[in-house]
Image (spheres, rainbow, N blue to C red):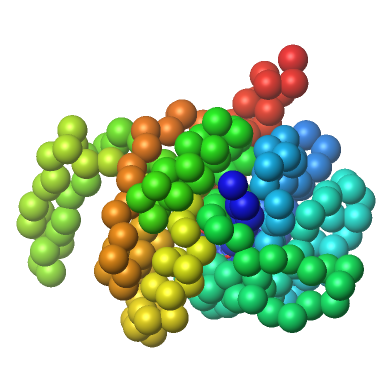
Length: 239
Ligand code: C5P
């Protein structure tokens, strides 16, 4: 299995507040993104890790990679939306690079968020193998809240049956050509407003997207209080 990772880390972390994007906040002595990179380093079968960061954070990310000794990492500049950042990350596998930073186009590409540091090898392997079988695969979790939609007057329009729906989490994995072609074919509207890579793959290619029930700790560090929860999970794992 030739697998590689695109790790979008190009966001500004507006919901967390403060000036430091959440992926660079320190949790137990190292930036959050460094914990996520450690999770991938434990999965030795993953060949390359493309980290996508906003242009103004490239130097900071270089310092983190050197300071914490991360290996197999290639840095790429992000775009204005998550989709554009992922597309930049995918393109990196097709660029001619100097011999010392050569990365090859993988058979399967795993997409994961920098701000989900608790991902474990088991679910990474499950999504990668399912992507090889189905074309695309992603981790899901049962919904905690019921999802409802409001109409233009701000009143309830409809609600979804909670037991039938799932929260789409990360990691997701794709045959490289499927997700790359989907990104090339999709519209600017998709690139600006979409948040679901599996959906793009389904819409713009002839693939299935296998859903895999993931473990509870795939959640995304989003708000400031999540940093405290992240710290206690990491402590618990180290003890
Ligand atoms: O904003 P959201 O929480 O959905 O971001 C998920 C991931 O996508 C984060 O790791 C964030 O850094 C990344 N992202 C990105 N480029 C953007 C926006 C978000 O790489 N323009």
